[in-house]
Image 1 (spheres, rainbow, N blue to C red):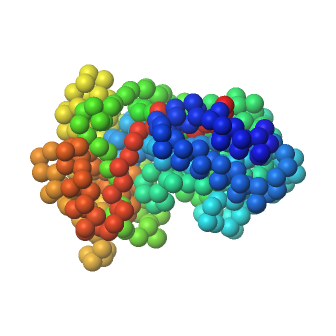
Image 2: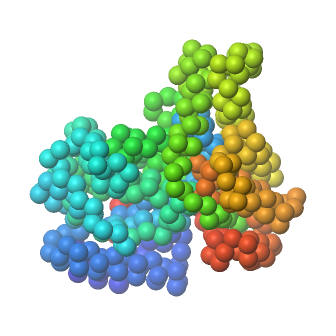
Length: 427
């Protein structure tokens, strides 16, 4: 379908069933979704011209529910996609170039004549485009080029993984255009991780991409090369709770070293015990060798390994609680996970500037407001970014108002869980 045909189809409601399922919305909210896609199509036309067929795509942000920094050790994670997403209008090309314009940012251009990592592209979106195209080509799906316009309401720096959503979005475009849609959600997640590790230069795990790609509430077992996904479900409104993500306002600058130290220290413990990652180490062997591990690896590495073993178990317990309808027990596991991240994993603050401990303060504020109700934990990678809180619905308005009095207006975001991951949006 060309641009005019898709705009008419959106206006006439032909996309409404797909949008309603994607965003769980109707009425005015559905009209707003429809208009968002129409505006994106018009913006694509202004950037790339109005001729030729186009397609629509969406990839959601994600929230980590339990299992903090367990994925890169081959452990377990519980995660969910959320109702904030990146959408794209894209057209297939055969010119050997990817051109992608994100709303509010300069055009990213990647020439496909060289599909090797480029040092000058480290930490750029162009590196991700090149890396994803390289992996698709390596897998037998040569990428010949495409133009795309994207717009996002996934909060940058929020711990909702805007970068992973971007990677999953591009992966779905490449799958649709160059592989007849045959590349599945797990493969798309793995391709995104590859691009981020090898081309972008960030040593991330796979959890972010997997949650964005698969959609819904999923438990992920990373022990094998092919991650095992177990789908579960939770109706937060039925349980009487809202899921809030609070922006602490912390600065993300110069934190790559802090993030990288966590997997490095955990792997140091594993390698001292003759393994590659902690999931290969028996918990009893770890505790039997604590004295030697402290001397050889240091106390912080030992504490972080302690967190890993405990939080890995918590994911199993949290999933079991949800499956059996024991939501209060689930919240207890989330609370324990938060305390462990703060005390053992130590990814709440970098502790080199006592004037700025935004994440720690946000956690303390939420705990004070919630009392003995709900649950609070650091969200995502930590050090900066966001805090996750389960807030009773009868407290939500007051909680939002009082946290924003301290953190700033618009810093408390109420999330909905989305059932669909990265996808092409079709009639």
